[in-house]
Amino acid sequence: MPDAGGQGAAVVAIVPRRGAGAAAVALFIASGALAGESGPITGNPLVDIPAGPFVFGRDDGPDNERPRLVVEGRPFAINRTEITNRQYAHFVAETGHRPAFYADHPVLGLDERPVVGVSWADADAFCRHYGLSLPSEEQYERAARGTAGQPFPWGAAPPDATRVNAGAEVCCAGDARDGYAMTAPADSFPGGASSEGVLHLVGNVWEWTSDVYAPDEPAGEAPQQGGAVFRVLRGGAWNSDPRHLTATYRLAYDPDFRFSANGGFRCLRSAP
Image 1 (tube, one colour):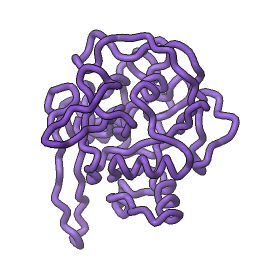
Image 2: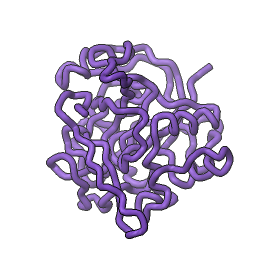
Image 3: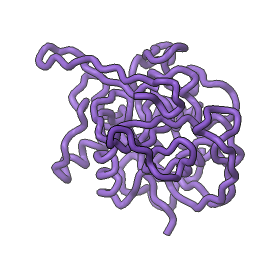
């Protein structure tokens, strides 16, 4: 399936060999004040993002990131990190929802790593259970770029091994030079935090947003391809090359696919 930038970000799948101990994976290619309460998800507080104008989109990137706009944002509070396997397992125990596909993986399934192997509906159900929602593209980009439209959560400096869990220079393989061959713990890489203290808004795992994908107008109607409606992932992942590791990159994806080893999510609470 082509990615949102039209460059053909592939999905790599290794066919599971059940019972053989193989690590079977599929891949999506392609310090702030805490909210007044810690939030409903244990160990993952909500971080306040204040209201005010911010830059959304850019004019010097792929066509689907244009145009650059100044948007008047409403306040919201977003999880400080991605949802972890421990947090998702607690949700499963409370609700009987199906487990994440990689819940038992020896690396991807570790408690403090971001949960992966979840569909859009799985992520949406988790957030709704806690009275929260998935972020919109505008909300995700505001949290990741600050108000001035910087390319990365930490500013303008290019990604490096102190700031982000990323992949090789050429798409789309993992790279252990940052200390992790696959996912990193959700509270790692503090040097890559946003101005409000939110972690991993670029790198580690792609993150589901609430929006359907439209190539020319991010908030518009979703295109149909063979009857499918795509949702948007943001942020890049542990196997992403530099082209995918920006706060503006938009990846269109099948919302029903739950076998990706590099796609997760976080939740937010919008202002009343």
